[in-house]
Length: 239
Image (cartoon, rainbow, N blue to C red; front, side, top):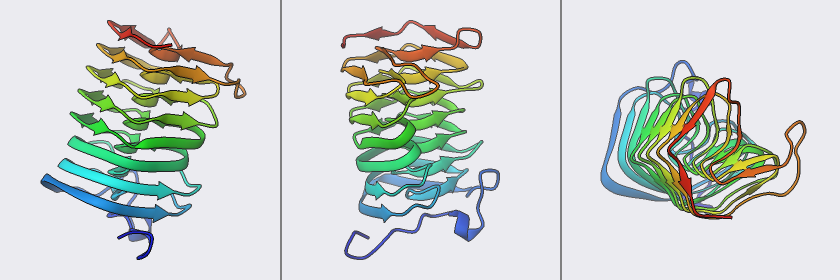
């Protein structure tokens, strides 16, 4: 596909009857192949190669140009459902959306491991991350090399926000992070769950407050709700 041919229609889209609790199941093994010129300009939710992914996606590189006002968008899967897994995948290109924008998944309810994002990610409202916009599922052994920006809060190098019982471990960020409100080199806001054994090496900037969030930039996390969130053994070399 491409801009001259029109929009890619995601596999397992909402229009095809899929949902967050009824995603695609199965195995998509890219066998180290690449998909290039994936083009989407749409205000619909859950945009990416896959819409609602509840199966196993692995060993794939996706270069995408995704834009529009909708949330939940990423090169690989707009919404990774509970029980789904994305592993050994790489994203490149440009991902833009309203909120929950990421390189690998927009929303992560499953497991993401051994993935790398090189795409530039932008959220017009908030919740943007190199790997995922929001993580309620686990992330391990992942990396971000792209530039992460947002016009709102919860902007992070790996995840915009970590919630629930999610763990984000053994991952690093080497991309610039810029937004408003809570911005962090690894996670914008650690609301609950665990972030450990991570590092970040590039600059993090919070340009202004974004109600109700104050302006707070952290080399690892912009904000930690210490009653439920735990941060351990993380390092940085950035400003």
